[in-house]
Image (cartoon, rainbow, N blue to C red; front, side):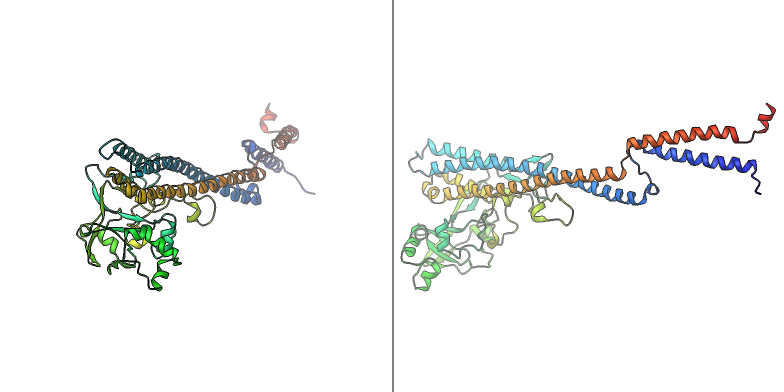
Length: 450
């Protein structure tokens, strides 16, 4: 027979009562909406909750990144769209100036030149567009103003080029190694001491008459020679001579011109004799736009995993928007690119308009104005496509967020109805336990004295 003492009964009752109170306290914790507060509550559920919580945090970061990218690209799109409109106006003015029925002493020429200048100034202003305190076309150097135009009183001597159209480029097939839309196919213009204009292929050193490049090559095509190489192979002479220093792989352009096309000190004194004619660079005095940003891209990652520079970048640099030309393409050896090629070409068109050079405008000015618009249009198209990609990613992340939130609720959320039922049960058990204890526990000495 086992004897149960009063102390044992009291200790056992207190332990059971504490257990009931502990269960009630744990249930009360769930009143904040979560049934998981420590790993011991549900080790399996808690591990799943931690995994979901990490995924939720990542999703939030990617959503913030995508939203920032969308904001950046929308600002870029707005600026590029405005630039395109201005470039179309500039092209229209160039076509108008190319007509040779203007009064050189006044009237239309000065008015057209002023409107052209205003167009370039507006584009430079748009190129300095900011989002907050960051310049959107400055690459990663986005805290400093990227584009600056020289003063009207500080005119520079810039080299003049001959821009080839598609048929000319196809015939002079060795002119330029790049077929990308942001590379112009150009020759360098030379002035001969015989009063004629010549064009230099800076990759081969060959020099051609202006007449041959503009019209004479058509006779070669009519005779069945599709390219200059075919004509030369048949013994037909196409050039008037060559300049040995201007060969592919040389630094001919870099030695004589800055990447903006401005003639260097060495270039200003350059001359060469070709077939008895002494030649110098054709130049035009004009303002110059310079670019102080860099060519690096800003990435705003939109999904988990490794970065994708081809799809995660949200900005456009000066080179993306304004392309390259003879003075800063890969073959020029001028590095880095100017980032302002199209702007400086537009200023060349403006300078030629000021000089009332309708013949140059009709043969080269209109082409330059058209290409400037094409380069910006390409940048705009790429930005629009990237914006659509980020918008789609935003929708995917939003849907993923809903799934994660649902998973978190399923594993950690409190069932309010169930919780209320359990609390009522615990409260009833607590009340019954207190009532029962008052009846069965031994009386204390105080109770006896009373």
